[in-house]
Every structure is written in structure tokens, then in C-alpha cells.
Image 1 (tube, helix red, strand yellow):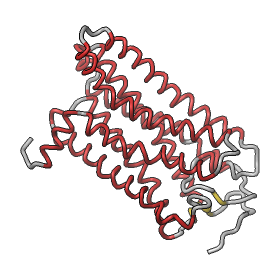
Image 2: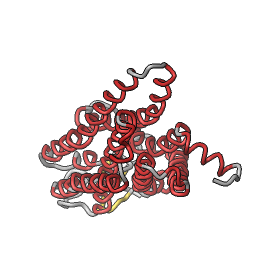
Image 3: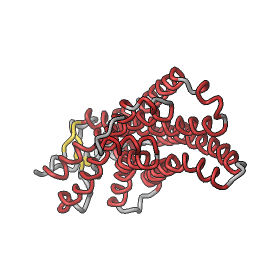
Length: 315
């Protein structure tokens, strides 16, 4: 199937997703690691949800936030993977203009939601370590529910302008997206107009949502580390820090590739397209795959419950 490089419609009826430019002949082989990552993400996050739901001892703030993270990871990866697989396996590159904007909204809103959940989990660790006697009275179930609702509303509202801004631009040069997904800057960079509003708004969201979340996480862990280093024994310090190690690792796996991708789209004009695509793929698929593995292995209660499931012992 041949595709036109240009369209004279203000809003094209379809976009063309190239997948990984220059590596089209290897798409089937490239799909294998992505399929593996997606399968691990689906299995791992459903397992986390099942274990927390069926184990009464895990019905607490930390595990409720972990369930929210699992649901967010499932939605985020499922928003992208089916279309990406159709590109890699069946060369089905066309995506409806409205469908592209819908995918854009879900990608950015659920990515921001994941950032908010990490901030909420940092709050839980801060209260648990710095104010352990007040943990059950500060983070009650109604408070956890309100935090979850606030994150959903915040991310939904901040991400809503993305598709509206993208829709207003004229796309008279090309409708080909050198990507396998509809990221905001990947789409608006195709417009034949001054897109500084879109770029500035994207930066505003990065700093006002993820930036503030990052500042809150850093501030929380500064207080946590102060308490940890004030503990009297080395064993107590190591044990307490171990409860935060997995959280810190998944935070880095989430924030670093995303920040790198955002900067590449705005300032990395000389960087190869293949590198753009691979980095964006990492920040989308790595956290949903890594989160259940890290939390499942590093969280003793979840690991113990998982082992009991495999050896067919009762709870």
C-alpha cells in the first residue's frame, strides 16, 4: 500500500504511523521484545491486583496505591500496544484522526496519573517512616480514596487541552507520523503553523504536574533519609531504607526516559528518528513491565502471598 506524503485538509481524515523509521523490514522481529514486555506487564499487574484484593492483610494505603498503579499501567500499555502490533505484524499503519487524538489523550493523562501515584506513594512512605504512630489515622481509607480521585481529576483536566490544541492546527504538509504512537509533540510537529502554544503548554504540564510531583517526592525522601540516618543501628537503617528502595527504582525508571523524550522532541532535531522512537517506547513500556516485578519481589507481603499461591497453600 502506498501512502501520500501530503494532505490538503485542515484536519486529515487519517494519520500514517510509520512504526520505527528505517527498520520496517525488521518490524516482526522487533515486535518480539515488545510482545514479551506487554505480556509481562499484563500478567504482573493483574497478579498484583488479584493478590491485594484477596489478601486482607494487604488492605492498606501502600497497597491501594499499588493497585492504582497497576490499573494505570494496564490502561496505558493497552492504549498503545494493539495498534503498535498491527503496524509491526500487519503493516496496518493508518489511524483515524480522532482515534489518534484519543490515544494522545490517554497516553498523556495516564502517564501524568502514574506520576501522581508515585507522589502519593512517597507520601505514604513519609508518614510510615517519619510518623509511624499516626500512619493509620492520617492515611485512612477515605483519605486514600480522595487522593485517588484528585489524581484522576487533575490528570484528566491537564491532559484535555492536548487533543484540542492538536485539532486546531492545519496539517497541510504531511500526515505521516514517524512513530508508532500519537504523542502530542510528534503530532503537532507535522502542522504547518506556529505551534509554540502547544509546545509551551506541554512544557507547562511537564513542570506543573510532573515537576511538582518530582519536587514533592524529593522533599519527602529528604525527610525520610534524615530519619533513616538518625536510627541508632546499621541494621535498622538498612531495613528501613529497604522499604523505600523499590519505590525509588521505579520512580527513576519512569521519570528519566520521559524527561529525556520530552527534551528530545523539543531540542533534539539532530538526533536520529530511530533513537526518538526507542526512547519513547522505553518510557511507555518499561514502567508497566518493571513495576509489578520490582514491587512483587521487593515487597515481602506480596512475595509471600505469591509463593503460597504457587505451592497451593491456603492464605
